[in-house]
Image 1 (spheres, rainbow, N blue to C red):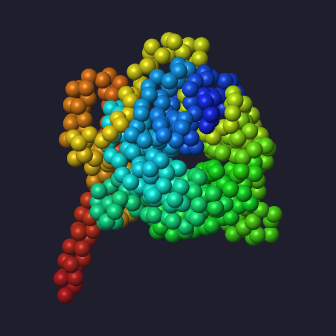
Image 2: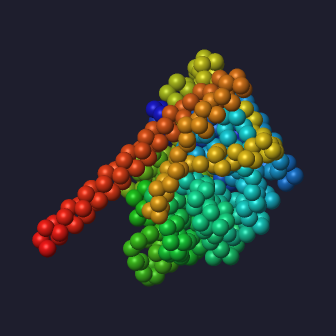
Image 3: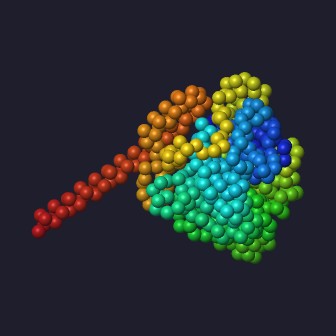
Length: 440
C-alpha cells in the first residue's frame, strides 16, 4: 500500500496515541483513550490501529481507531484481559495473549474467535508472526519462548501444538524479534534476566547468549541481520553482534559492540523504518527518538503528549489521511474498520479451526505441503460473507482471497517445476538403462 511512513506511539497511562510523519516531523491526528500494555499496539494491514487496554487487573478490552477520527470507533471485550497483540501482514487475523497464559486467535473481518489454547503457565508478554506468517511466536512471564505450528502435517509430526519450546530464560520474557526465512529464520528473545538469546528456528539450538549491563525491555533486528539493538532500563540502546566473534575487552561485555545514548529513562520499545536505516526508540521519559544507524546521530525527536512511551510502530499511512480532511476521509474509508472481536469460541467454529489456521506459505525444507487455501474453502467463506451482508467484511476478505490465490498459483508453479524435474530424471534413467543394454 502506498502512503506516508508514520511513527505511532502509545503509553501505559491514558495518554492516547500519537502519530508523526517520520520524514517531515509533522504531527497527525492524536487518537484519544488509549492505555496500552507493552506490545499491545498494532496496525492492522495499514488500515486501522488496534490496542489492548489494561486499566486494571480484572478487566480489559481491545480498541480500534481509524486513521481519520480521534475517538475509539470499535470496542471489544474479550473473556480476559489481553496484553500483547499481533496481526498478520494482510490483516486477516489478530492474536492476543491473556493474563492466564492463554492465546486467542481471531478472524478480523468477522470478529470470530477461531481458536483459543493454553500456551503458558503465566501471563503472555510477547506475540509475533514469523515473516512468512506460518508460525506464531510467544513469550511469557514464565520465562518460556514457544513457537506455535499452524500446519496440520507438521503439528502431527511434532505431536503437540508447538514446534519449539525454549526455556533457558530464568525470568520474564520482555521482547521477541524474528529474522527472515520463515522456518529457517533466527529468533532473538530478551528477558529480565539481563540476557538476549539468539535461537535457530530450523534446529531449535541456542546460537548465542548475550549478557547486558542492565535489563533489556526492547529489541530490534538489523534488516541485514548483522547486529541487533537492545533497549535497556539504564537508558542506553546497546548494539550486539550476531555473527562476529567479539571479545569481552570492551566496557559492555561479550558481543556488545557499542551503544546509542540520549534517553534519560528506560528505553521501552524499538522499531525500524521501512528502509532499515532509521531506528525509532520510545522511552519512559516520554520522548520518541529517531536514530540514523549509519552515523549513530539523532535524526528527529518527538514528544508524546504526557506520560511514558511503551509502544512504537513505523507503518504506512494512506496519503489521504490528512487530519484536515478527516471528515471526508472518514466517510470514504469508514467501512475499513471491522466488527468487535468475539468473547467466546462458538461451538460451530470448532470444526473449522484447521481450515482457518492454514497459512499460505511453505516453511522448512522438509516437504512441500498443502498450506494453501483450497477453492472449496474460499467458496464457503464467500457464501458466509454474503449471508452476513457486511460490505467491510466482504471487501477485506476479497483482498485476502486475491492474495491467497496468488500464493496458490505460486504453489502450483512449484509443483509443476518439481514434476518437470522428476520427469527429466525418469527420462535420463531410462536412457541410461537403454545405453547399458546396447553396450552389453
